[in-house]
Every structure is written in structure tokens, then in C-alpha cells.
Length: 99
Ligand code: HEC
Image (tube, rainbow, N blue to C red; front, side, top):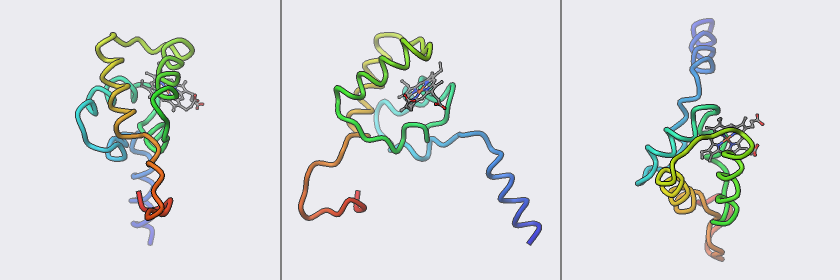
């Protein structure tokens, strides 16, 4: 029991290398590099936004939170976020949980 607790505590103590929460795809390494310096990927991996909202979010990170990012990285990250972390298309055959 104690061992289980210790294992659990160790898991919690591991810093947020929560990249596993991000879907695989082109642009993921850039997103991980650019977006997990200050907080873990879990800060945004469950967020589902459209293109305009993601653009605003990434722009907000650069203006308000001091993210420095090249134009190329900005484009790559934005494309990744829009492609993989966008709201599911309305589909009557899909429950909200099935994505
Ligand atoms: C320079 C540090 C830094 C970097 C790099 C960074 N962020 Fe953030 N981010 C923050 C801070 C600070 C917060 C607020 C944390 C809190 O409220 O606990 C935050 C919060 C967020 C939130 C939660 C919503 C909000 O506005 O509070 C999202 C989503 C987010 N970041 C996405 C991203 C994405 C996507 C990237 C990559 C483009 C990124 N962040 C890179 C500092 C950063």
C-alpha cells in the first residue's frame, strides 16, 4: 500500500511532460517545443478551438505571456492546433464522448 502511494506520488511529482496528451501529427514537436516551456501540454491539450480562437490564443501567449516565437513556428503551431485540437464537426452519430 505504501509502495503504491509512493509510486503515485512520484508520478505526480514528474513535471508535466504531458506531451502524450497531444495527438500525434506534423507540427507536434514544434508545439511541444514552443508551448510547453511555461506550462504543460495539459494546459491546452484538452482545449478545442476554431482557427480564429486558436490564432487569438497563440497571439495572446505572445503578447500577454511573453512567448517569443518565429513566424514559421507560429504558423506551424497554429496549423497543428487548428488541425488536431479543433471542435468536432457536428455529427448526429457521435456522442460528445466519442471523440
Ligand atoms: C512564456 C511562457 C508561456 C509559453 C511559452 C506559453 N504559454 Fe500558455 N500560458 C502561460 C501562462 C503564464 C498562462 C496562465 C497560466 C495560469 O493561469 O495558471 C498560460 C495559459 C495558457 C492557456 C489557458 C488559457 C489562458 O489564457 O489562461 C492556454 C490554452 C495556453 N496557455 C496555450 C498556450 C499555447 C498554445 C502555447 C504555444 C503557442 C503556449 N500557451 C505557450 C505562459 C506561456
